[in-house]
Length: 166
Image (tube, rainbow, N blue to C red):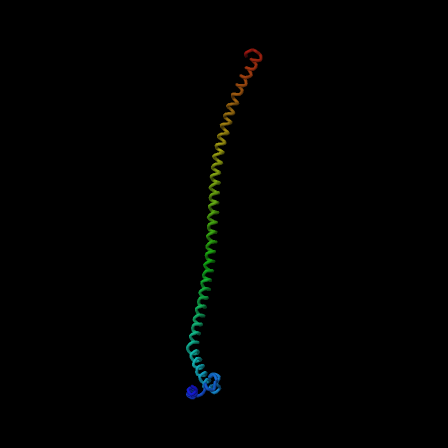
């Protein structure tokens, strides 16, 4: 077995026979540096020519999309503010129009009521005058008969008191 181990070590160049870990073996550094440079340059080339442009393109597209969305939001917000101002203006005009209609109707109703009141007052005045005339006529009739009734009553009293008939 020892012969096989020695043969294996001789077949592989004896590197492992020395017992050094290959990445830390100083005799292998030039080869490692060359392969490191090749790998680094290959990765650098791939990143600079393929991956990074795609990432930059995605970032630019996203920035444009975000900016477009912000511009759209600003335009929509401005349109909403304009619509709100227009709606408030229209509401104020509608309120003013409604207030004018109500005031006109009140004035019209007050004029109609005043006219009706004047007609009613006139009718009541006519009725009051007629009633006053009837009362006056009845009073005159009553007073014209009072003298005769008083004479009759005085005669009846004198007759009862005096005992004689006149």
